[in-house]
Image 1 (tube, rainbow, N blue to C red):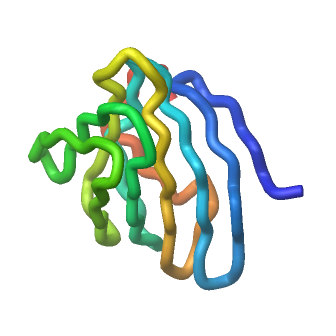
Image 2: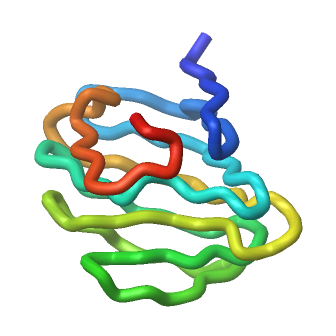
Image 3: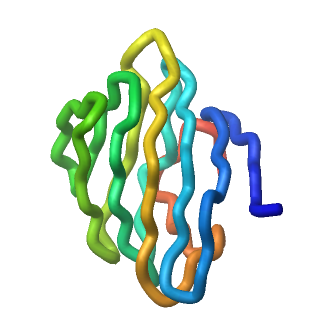
Amino acid sequence: MLEKSDRPWGRYEVLQESPSHKVKCIWVSPGKRLSYQRHQKRSEHWFIVSGQAQVTIDGVISSLGAGESLDIPVGILHRIANIGDSDVVFVEVQTGTYFGEDDIERIEDDFGR
């Protein structure tokens, strides 16, 4: 069975994993947001499935809704927040050389991690 994890902001499930990529489905609860973070060994592509998201990419804030997507290159600061009243659901495709949770450099975190 692939990894599932509850987090203070919601939860995620790993859908597929290989040496070259990792695919997650991520649920962000209303009013919550992930840490402002970057990775040194992977890039990410986010595809919004449902909900209303506010994303911050290198200090630039924008809104994304269902059917919209964005790319996050290696080393770029990023965050997603749920600004709606239902879960934000998005698919994250990671590509790179390493996909461990320890490749997260948190700059700011609502949960003190």
